[in-house]
Length: 195
Image 1 (cartoon, rainbow, N blue to C red):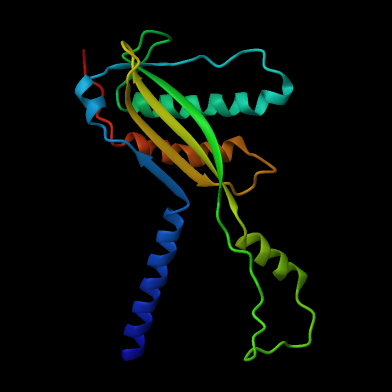
Image 2: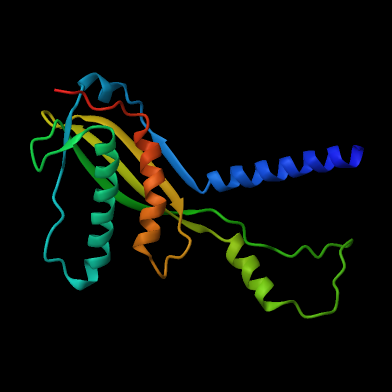
């Protein structure tokens, strides 16, 4: 009986830890929605249009911008905001960013009380140890909403996620990860006012 209670508690703690670690991979930070809510907006426009006729070297950025716009527009429309090509009650702009999240380079500790076994280490294990302990790239999407009349900032959010595979970007995977982040960010905003 004692063993099963202890095992159940241990299992619950492990599951809780896994759930919390899974939730921390994406971070969403938002400003207060008070200023936005006081304006009683009903429609939105994009601050700038995506340039057309981009060179092939910029195509991935163009596709990423299109994906961001689609995801943000879908979430705003779910809240009742209408898209207008120009003249919306508020303007939406966004920017991409990247930074390194610190890591610690593993250093062997060969002190007087340690021992070294005379065998060659597993190269795959060594590669994983170095890869997982170093700095990781964190990609960010910054959203900014401005009043359509005077361009004053009324709300902003930052959505950040560790980049898992920067060498092979997959726009479908980006969309799947972006959708819950944008939904979480926009959750603090009120629904559109009916006019």
